[in-house]
Length: 273
Image 1 (tube, rainbow, N blue to C red):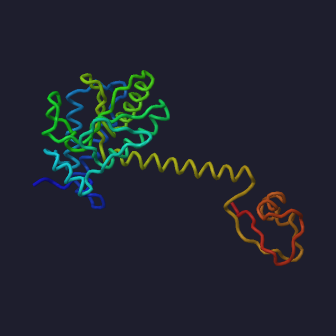
Image 2: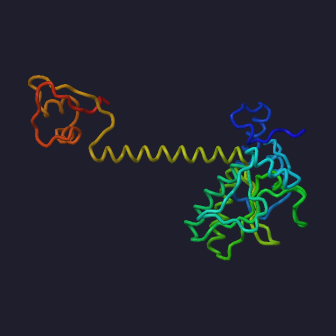
Image 3: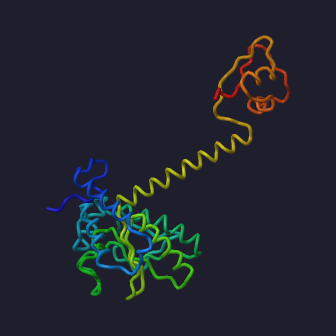
């Protein structure tokens, strides 16, 4: 009996041995020198793809019926065309969720960089539907691979190859430039790729927060403010001095046009640093 697919295990704690093996393999992949990378493909590359498929407990699907069954269970998701991605001649438009995420992200970046759509020519392909020249060790039957069309634009090819090599260097996929017919074969490593995207999004959120804080600081507005009730004898000048700020900043913070304040009035003042 086959092990449950990785997608079906979301929300469950992975066995310690399996998690350790995945982390070890990812560390090994990420440690490969960039200079040694290429898109020519190799037996070692096929070995990495197969090891990752087995570490994820992925099933090598034999028939189209099994592909559709996995899709009905949500272990595979349907990949649809969009303004950035086009499916051409894809018999089974299904893939692992992380592969669909990869294609959405890559498609948007590719179109922005090249002005043309990313063309996907193959996704999940059961073993009984493999072409004659396909390797018997192909991971297409697991749903973790996609084939991308070889663009006629040299600029687009160079951009795509640079991005694929960068992701390969990060240990989140394996990519090969095939010759007959010309296309790019990409095997996405689901857990490492999902973790990679989460880190990107986290860094982007941090940069956005920092940028927002910088804008607020440059405009004299701070989100770190406390309430202050005006006491007898207070003026904006004495309050500003007491809280290490300026009269102008107090006015901006409280929407004051003049300098007049009154006893008992609530003002926002910068919090003590």
